[in-house]
Length: 162
Length: 153
Image 1 (cartoon, chains in turn brown, blue):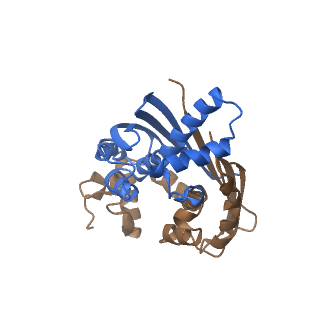
Image 2 (cartoon, helix red, strand yellow):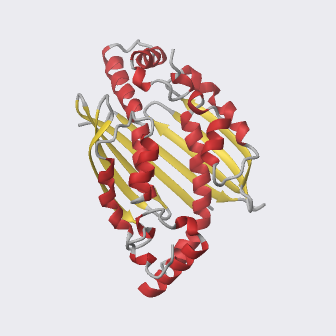
Image 3 (cartoon, one colour):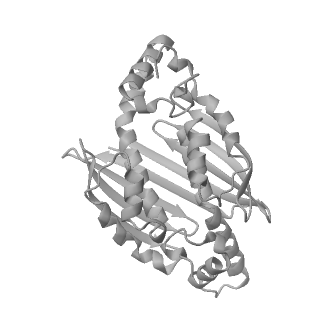
């Protein structure tokens, strides 16, 4: 059968010369097209700039959505971000897509810092890789029980006291 | 240079009038995986689900595929459906599978409205899409209260 709907989202992280991260986000689906740029400044991951544009939307009200983005300037990417962003951007009375977009930009910024660690973890023998994952768990205890790889019965958890 | 990018694609296809297939594909610099689920509409109950991990970070990750079945029977209309997915599919299995599943689930009413809009515009090309969409939301209370454009009343 033919599709009734297709959605494509892309988020990209580009380090800037001044050390900040420019994160661009774009959503294009059968009903909606919008884009957003967020600037995040390490090391505290403060959002220093945020702007959005609605190009195509299913409802007239969507045109006012980008105005909510200025409220997230000054926020930091970290624990509690979802609750804070939802609150500042209007929750169910705001734009659900832009709120998710902000969270996806934040997630992408975190993953930008994660890539080198993942690349380093992939090198060496199985035992060497296991040891590196366990060192990562000891340094980031929040990862314990965060997914199947770090569940208590995972082979990666053998020898680690959760 | 782009140091990290992620692409997420969601598609919606009606298998029958009351059965929707949602497919979600995630590809980024670290992960690549996809899920496919069937959802009974308009209740939003997940009646079937499967997934594939194509690129992942540890040899344990593929175990997460089995935890997709924890989503069976869950309704996308349940006020707590996202936390339940994050817990039962994400935390027990894979958080990225959960992200795909949530993105697919969030598209439920967009798929339905898009389908109905397309059918209407085919039969009546002069219909205003904005007016149709406003009327569609008004006539589908289950799709209300999800954003500024869909506030009840």
